[in-house]
Amino acid sequence: MTGDLDIEPTLAQRLRDYGEALDGIESPVVIPTRERHRQRKPAWRVAAAAAAVIGISTGAALLLNERRVDVATRPAMTWSSLASSPLGARRSSASLWTGTEWIVWGGLSDLSDDAIGLRDGAAYEPQSDTWRSIPDAPFAGWDPVAARWIGDEAVFVVNWLLGDTAGYRTVAFAPSSDTWSVLPPSSEYMFGAALTDDSVFWLRLDADKGVLIEQELRTGNERRRQLPRGPAWDIQQGFRGLATRDGVVFVGRTTATCCSPGPAAMALIVRDDSLVLVLVPDEIRDLERFGIYGDAVATATSVLFVGEVNEDGMLRRVAYSLDPATATWSPVVAPSQGLFSEHHTSGSSTLLAAAGEHAVVLGGLDLGDGSIGGLDDYVAASVADRDLTEWFDLPVAPINLDRVAFISAWTGNELLIWGGETSDTGPNNVTDRILTDGARLRINSPQS
Image (cartoon, rainbow, N blue to C red):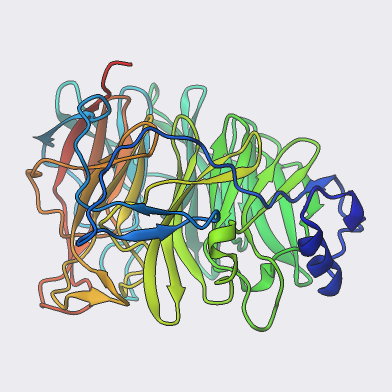
């Protein structure tokens, strides 16, 4: 079956050598490997003394530091304060923008291993800059893995614990009636989850093989599909599930190790009739055994992955845009700030958020030790233009951005942020205080 795939001959041979036959897969699989290189207008000038070099698969390089400010692409950015919340200190809360309100609920009570799960919540209205309390949820939930506004309900997939039973549950909140309801989809464990208007998609392992489970929201009826055997699913450390207009996309955070050679997946695109496995871009394929860490968001135009490649103990930032419609990666400019792997004990890093057509990086801990693995570790605050060709520094925020693990929501013209964790004990990688303040960042795109 390998001969039917649209892949490079050398890669096809690798797949055969590693025994990565795709027989038994329920639906067709396409494995594209070539990147698409778009011609972009120059948005920077060469600064040989201070430039950071990012190699791309053609062998060319982009010199990115000392970027020229392009007024034609720079968005207008303004910070403002956010009213104090009635919620107590917490971490790992769930949140979602409904169109008029920002729902924030659940979480864990403190930073200890014995933290208590929370059920209470509140709703924030930007127009009046006010909060209101909402009824407690049916159960305590934290560490949300998916959230979506569906019809007139905010639907969440969260981690939960009831007695000795733990796992992931789906719950919905209707702001019009201030009522909660528990929905059927659930899973004891998963490596990634995504929500559509009709279903929850889970990535799991079944007898050491990857499986995609699609559960209908209202009935719980499920469909199972075996995943392609390209990546080593059993050693993946998690996937970010994203619902896009071109299908559900799962973006992985790690690649194959010495114990499981062969090409590893950076993304899995789920369509009605196929599972599309998108391999590591050429630039970092040779580094696949060293690990790739980062996060992904779905902007209005594409899926953006920002992360770090660990090359012989030294880190470097990489960024790619994935077009789910064509299943191709395009190298884009990486931000000059932020650490996007789990360098902090809390398991958090710089926030990568979608803001309509833009992407934003915020926060991180100023550890005071200069760098980690060759990358400076300091607070990030920048926004990308619509074409991901330039990152611009943000104005000074009304709150301290020296924090990780805070929540955010895009309203259509503002990015709302609240909470998080920080460190008061100097240069270390341990957070020891929960924050309860927030801010609003308005982003206005330039006229086309």
